[in-house]
Length: 92
Image (cartoon, rainbow, N blue to C red; front, side, top):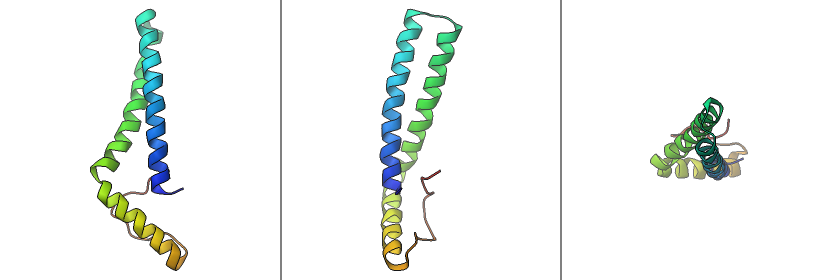
């Protein structure tokens, strides 16, 4: 999976996390108790994690683009991804 594929997946995950957080907030409004509050907090932590990953990419989008290009060129000419990067690899 390329960094761009990973970025697209992170965007999709963030959008799903927004939906989940919204559902949790509606549940919290309807049934205010410790359980629904904790569920809401958990969904918000998940959303924060996804948004943090996206912010790193957006803050360094040119560097990520160049690293992705270097990976592609290295793969064509040497059969493996580039050894040096200015940005961290997105894959886990």
